[in-house]
Image (cartoon, rainbow, N blue to C red; front, top):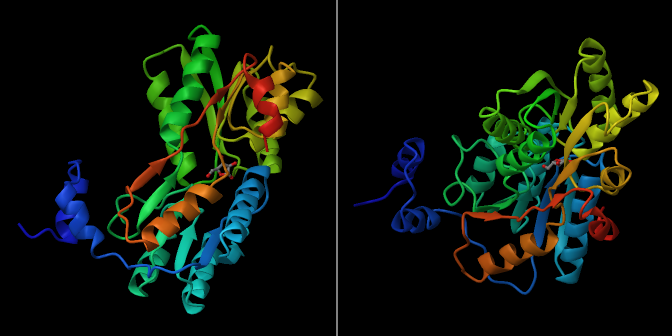
Length: 327
Ligand code: AHR
């Protein structure tokens, strides 16, 4: 049987597992990376407006330096269109490989195909592109990051247990169209569908940003003063919501029980202070894993199409031990 890209897409669309043979055949179609002592690596960052992004960039820069690689770094400043242009500029600069943290799932698809056409391999770092349009092992080499569905699931489990299965929940979603926003929403919803007392009464995007999260939560909480819980897709929006609760004279941790995701210093300190129930980790320190993958690929090794981080769950029982390494 001759396995083509079309065969793989059909298998994927039908939900069938890729065969080893199929993966190898498709892999052969990907741009190669010549073995070198050091590489010119493009890193296309999404934005730099929160501690998670800053920690990710610092990790990538420090690992590039450690390995003697030249890093071509761009910051898309929260614009998917700019990020596509950033990738195009990396292609023009003839980088050896591109590490892309795609801001949103769909708008970055052209950048993936253009890099492939230019013969430049690409690794997806932390976020992913639309899996129905571009495939790891076929259109780009591999995805390295967290299982966002599982993160949402874990947040829901801890919240559901703490609330005895009953809560009126405000959900602050991440950036519209971003894979962590889509998947964290899905993971949480999947868990609570078996707990009819857990109801999402309002859900809106706070764009993963502290100030937008603050404004959106303020509006939603005013409209829904009966809310008893907050599920926030990241810690920055949680910090925004905490400032709203403070200003309204409400007690976070008593009046509203909060589940969040990331593991920032601020949010983890809020667990220690009794204001936040749980933070599910999303580790931003991608440098070592990303550059390991670059060098392995350059050595001609076949990478797994998906390298998934193991995320921890922080509550009042274990947060003190984590706080010194929080970002
Ligand atoms: O893609 C990871 C998410 O993006 C993090 O949760 C968030 O803080 C960041 O902006």
